[in-house]
Image (cartoon, rainbow, N blue to C red; front, side, top):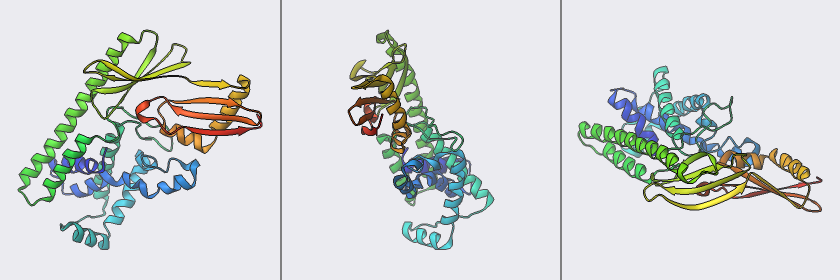
Length: 314
């Protein structure tokens, strides 16, 4: 989800609950996205790829650590005075046990919203590195962003508080409706896909920017071949079909190719690629000097740039 939505959702919930610490909650809602400040660590040290956007700060544990640091910094007097001057409003933020807990509530709303989006987040890091996602929204939703901007403008204007409350409540209701529509569409699409996928099994669906169009991935019974395609649930149209084997080895023995792939899998570049990929596939091509091991993603909408790792001496 976008930064504005992450701010508005906890602010809206806490406002409707008549909390005095709604601003702290809203700041907690945006705190995890300040991971952009540490993303350079993952660039300088590729093996630390979890230091990236939607990485380490987007877990239950480090989300708490992040918000404690963030709330402490923004509650310092120089920061509050600067922010008050910039936004022309009273930026009264306090750092107490209560406000930290409220801010962490904002973090939890952030994690929940990002969990709904494609690729998801590492909720249980450092205990589990895997990302978790409901795959209902694409990473950014244009309509949601536009509505969030309107709500922010209403909040900033000096209008009666009842209009602000109406805008906040309306935004939350629209988000719930959008989520419900997407959940229904996803289930319906998975049901429709069974009608023309007799030779494939284990169909999964991923959202596009259009709530009625989905990217589907299915595999053969032996899981050696996968197929992806875009399906529009309104006109039942299929497009962008791509078929690939999980692993392809050429110009060398199969075992040598597997050894090359295993060595390539241990590199930071490949681990980072897999971290960002939906379905990573690999082609290993041998030569006299070694192997070129190329990785690609079969999901068209989120196709990562292909990477090739050279493995010598096998």
